[in-house]
Length: 302
Image 1: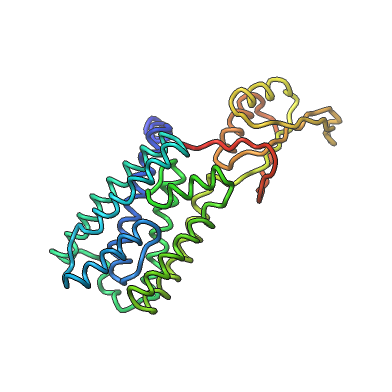
Image 2 (image 1 turned 90 degrees about the vertical axis):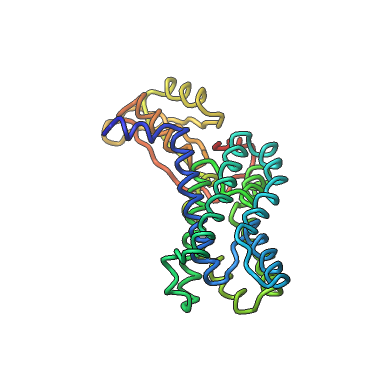
C-alpha cells in the first residue's frame, strides 16, 4: 500500500493524473450540463459554443464534433504563448489536455446524441440547478488541472501567463474574458441564457479560486536552533530570499533563530518537509499573503 501511495506522489505521475482527472471533469460539465442547459462555458470553449450555435442556426441541425474542431484550432496560437511565456512543460501538458478535451467532448456528444447517455437529462427544466452544477464541475475540473501544473487549455494558458508575468490575479483575468463571452452569448442566444451563464460563471470562479492556489502567496516562519544548516538547505533548494532574526524561547530561555520568507503557496509544503528533516523539533507557521510588491521571484509550477 505504501508503494502505491509513494508512486502517486511522484511529481510526473501526480501531474498527469491531475491533468487527466481535471480534463475529464471539465468535459463532463460542458457536455452533460452546460450543453443540456444551453449555457456557455468560458474562454475558448465558450467561443466554440457560440460558433456552433451560429452554425446550427445557419444549417438547421446539430453537428457532433464541430465544437471539438474549433477548440483544437483556437488553442494553437495560445499554445505558443504558453510555450514561450510560461514554460515548455506547462505548454506540453496543456496540449495533452486539449487533445483529451477534443476526444472526450466528441465521444460524450456522440454518446449523448446517438444513445441519450446523460445522467442529468431529467434535470433539463431546472435551469438554476444546472447552472450551479455546471459551474461546480467546470471550475473544479479547471482547478484540478491547474493545481497539478497543467491547464484545460484556452484562456487558462493566457490567464496563467498574465498571473505569472504581469502579477494579475488568475481569476480576475479569467473573469474578464468570460464576461465578454457572456455578452456575445446574450446577443447570439437569449437574455435568459446569458443570465444563467452568469450564475454558472460565478460558481465556477469561486470553485476555481478555492482549488487553484498555485500563484497565491504565504509567509513562512521557521523557528529553529539550526540556523546555518536550515538557511543553506532552503537557499540551495529555492530562489527566495530569507530574513533571519534571533528570538528567545520563553520556557527554555534559549536563543533561537527565526527564518522568515514569502513563498508561492504550492512551495510551502516542501519548505516544511526540508525544515523538519533538518530539525524535527522546529516550529513552523504559515500566514496567507494577499499581495507581494518588490523583488520576488515567481516560479512556475510546471
